[in-house]
Length: 193
Image (cartoon, rainbow, N blue to C red):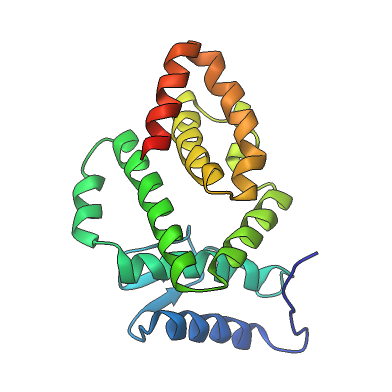
């Protein structure tokens, strides 16, 4: 059961417009366009919120949970630094993005009282819908498991419950591929960040 009220009488168009208006208002950015397609991301001018169905009972949680994070990237991420990082290998960029996502969520939680609540609820819903690959680490590559382990270690250390739920499986997957001493060294380095 979601923590947020959803008015069952409003139309799909009104739901989309409500999400867009909310995101523009909290970020004080009206020139951003929103696309309900693709994977949640932004290039600083457009925010993709994912292929979401306004009839889904979790539409607002999914759209706003991803949207507030992406709007924080719009206002607080140096797009030039991201462009430079994206020219690196996929692994380097994925690790860079993990640390950037934590930085953005920390800034969002400091700036907006409800930010963390929306992000936690998003994680809960994504887990419920089996849409977090880290919840099934045996189904992902070793490289992806490493990047997700790094990301989920960071978020778990900051108290995010969805990360704490997934981390034991990722740890087990990582320990199957790495010796304990190397695993402990990686863990210490990640938490120093």
